[in-house]
Image 1 (cartoon, rainbow, N blue to C red):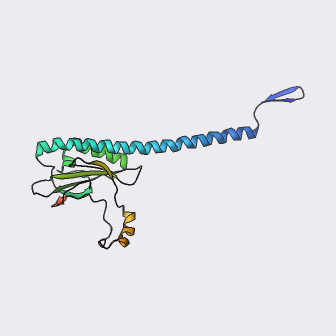
Image 2 (image 1 turned 30 degrees about the horizontal axis):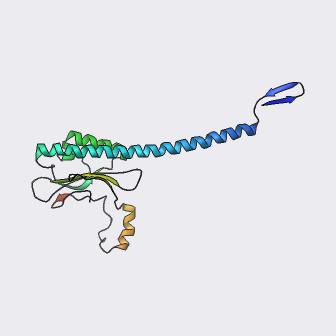
Image 3 (image 1 turned 60 degrees about the horizontal axis):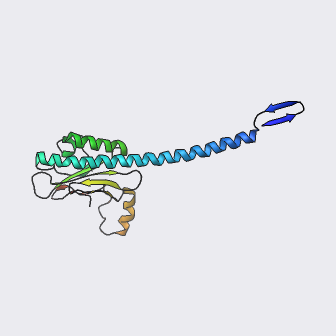
Length: 185
């Protein structure tokens, strides 16, 4: 702005004008950062979904080669060693590792058998950051979001149902184990 003070002209902005501009820049940057955070969350969820869908497709090859889905295991965090399909097949293992990177190592696996020799059902589920629930894929072709009773909600459920006498589960339950099929229910 030009101010005329006698014969001298001074150029510049007043302090209040500068403060208004700084406040506007602050508001705009806050809006941009909030939208970036939402984009990161959506990106992490898309990565989990893609990785688990690829693992589901790879399990077909594993079954063709082995005539079962490997050793039987109840729902637990996916193994990091051993002979289960989830670790023994390097491609499935890498897809689970990709999901673990996106969700902080919280991917769950289960393999069930109702007929005896080796697992004939399986499931892989990983929590989504953008919403409550898990992205779940299984050997029956399911690939979907499922809601899970989280540990925090268990106390409320405990008082509402007579069947919850054993206390909170250690994590989500997708079945698996001897005599129990695994799936995205």
